[in-house]
Length: 306
Image (cartoon, rainbow, N blue to C red):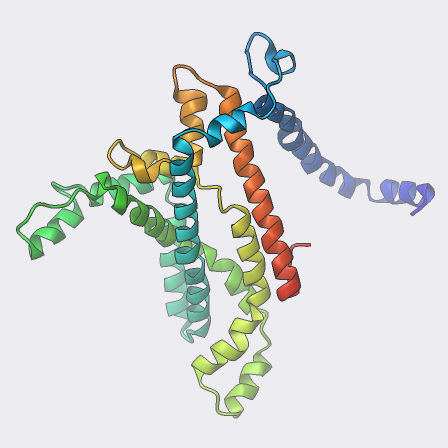
């Protein structure tokens, strides 16, 4: 494209370019400019000296994290929660979308959609509050159910390291399953109805049509979604884990995000360089996973992000 034609396009469609300029400015200011602060991970940051004046220490902060007694625990907990959430939560929205798409009654489909979508709009704080109320050992719903079948002491699941993992994952599955099915419902809406008509003429059952028509139609969408999920595999959210965390379940609930907060902000001797190094390590691992999964997907299934 020549400069003359580019100038003509800019003058002719200046409103469109102006709209595109606003998100571009947002990305530069809030996404790219803060990347300059990443260099703190390679320095011994001192607030008086500032980012540019603090002395370089190379990879010392990373070595400190790798040699820390917390490294194995926070990394293991992060991976376990991430993989568990992926295995438990990724297939269910797909199944739900296929089931709703197969439902012939419009009223029933609308009812199921409304019921499954609503938990998504519950805030994290309220969600954790619901868990605390339900699993309370004195007056919670779980305690009442327990007393119906047993006279023994109600187990305190909120303080159990083993129960924490299951509570975190399955509450997240319940909260996000319906909302996650929207993208698959949109993909299923593009399936040609003539394929179903032809399959019905050939005597295919509804289940056979789901497996042979509907499911293959959304495989590209499933692949892209899986790639994006793998790119956030190490990105366990901070807020929900931190709110559910206590001293008794800390062995299972201490993840990278909460550990970064504690060493960077909540500690009396806050170490910004150390916490930045941990966050940078986490981001690099996510980037590597995204590149690997995308490459494998492109070679195996010919569907990828790029």
